[in-house]
Length: 117
Image (cartoon, rainbow, N blue to C red):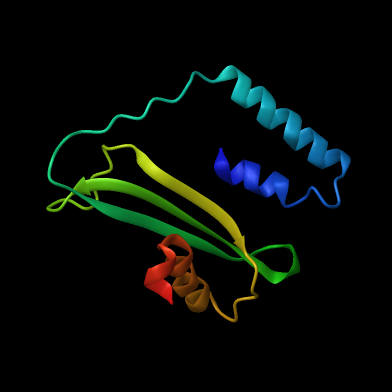
């Protein structure tokens, strides 16, 4: 849902009828879904992040970055049985010169500020 909402919000400065259609579709979907439930399991947990980027997929040659922060057991970092701690989805303001640069940028976007300075 956060990706759809972010995409809609990026159109708010120049809305069209299609933007209104997307807003209504989003609101219909949100109203018809049950409340989300997040379950955390007690264990030897550590924070983990899955991140991805779409290169040049937005207007004005912009890229979109996303990060899924969760807690997992040290032995099995791919296990995502625990709920998300934080989900991020944002258009990268700078124009990336390559897909590799965009992928590198998503890590700084997904990490706390102190880790990418």
